[in-house]
Length: 301
Image (tube, rainbow, N blue to C red):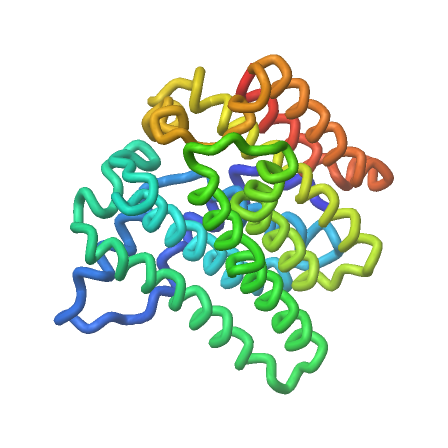
């Protein structure tokens, strides 16, 4: 794997983030503006970056990585749709996201719902449109079918949606560690797992590479959520791009509800080490993933 920086992958995503939005009739152009508003508001782009990095890590060439951009952007469409809907008054009722007013604050609740719906459907339209280009290439077509399946599963009722349901139903309740892990393995980690598995398939991964990347992503996803839980308590709002202490105000089930901050940080460190251990045998080839996991953990120190 070439020594490509996180910012290089992120810039690639940012440069193409609007490329796969279909042409929208002027009579319904407001939904495009609403979709565009949230897509271009910034963000870390962790999931699409992981998809591209995984594609290259398993041996994907430059053409494979270029072809994976469609899927990376589609994944960001799905993630952004979930944020728009999460921020709605019926869900988390947030007024700030990525440092700017949330979608429903700017466009109204109804348009925010439709923008989220539009991003979700556009993600699958973009991926399926790309897949149609490879009907005469069974190898590349099979890779794309598997990638779409991984993304679909991770975003659906056996992944992100399942976690969101459990998260809502756990509000104002004492939650066990097992239940908390279930919530965040689905709500947060599922889309991260889907990202690396989709990228791995697009790059032609073997079974061992797929298992190792999956183990890495599971632990990275949980670590990412624990770091966010900690930052909600002691993070800087300007750096986070959203309001602090929201979880406490809504009586959300979070790791700091079960453990003190030092124990949470220790668990974060353990998960980070476990994530990195899955890729130790790849040595310098896995440097990108190792650094990403360690940088995430450093956010709370």
